[in-house]
Structure formats: structure tokens, C-alpha cells
Image (cartoon, rainbow, N blue to C red; front, side, top):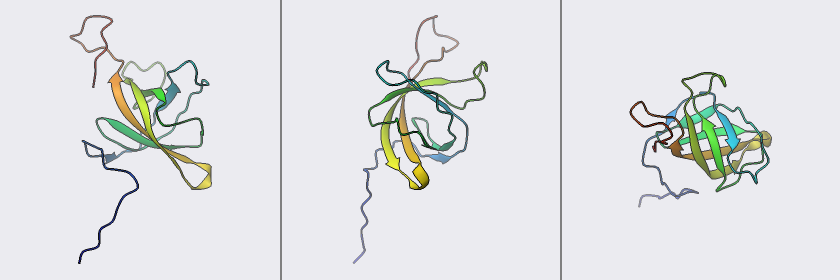
Length: 121
């Protein structure tokens, strides 16, 4: 009889994740959340999500954030900023946390879109 294993979280991903270590910038989007700017490095990413490790304990499930990925500098015109939602926060060893984000929409303008239009991912 084959042994079955259960995972702690249900598999909800639609896209495969790639192990990719790229810097990102994360900031809260809601005024009720204390302002911070976190500059972690991604552990993995897909078309619709990013997972990273951080020492910040501010993150909570359901939190809305602005994410720039990949992030090089504030003045880089190639930065791509997203609105994202925290879908999971894991406590890791050594005082770190694992944070999983679901990318809701991009805040960048597409070349064919009229000014002021926000494109969805």
C-alpha cells in the first residue's frame, strides 16, 4: 500500500515556481499599516506570485502591499511595480519569516494603454 503524505497548505498554484534570487522592494499599500520599506531577495517566483524571507514581523495574511520586482533602484524606469496580497507568513529559524505574495495587478502602464489606465496581470 502506497503511503500518502499531506501538505500543510493546499496546492493552489496555477503556475510553476522558479527558484530565482532577485531583489525586491515591498511597502504597505494601506494607510492603516505602519509604513516600512523592506528590501529582501526572492527565494522563488512565478507569473502570479513571489516568495521571500525577511526579518520583519509586520506582515500578516491578507495584507496589501506594493511590490517592485525585480528592484534595482528607485529611479530605474524598468522597475515593474505590483499591488499584491500576503497569502502566507511562515515562522522560520533564526528570527526570519517566509512571506508568500499573490500579485494582483501591475501598476505600470502598457505601451498601448491610455494614460491613467492600470493594467491587470
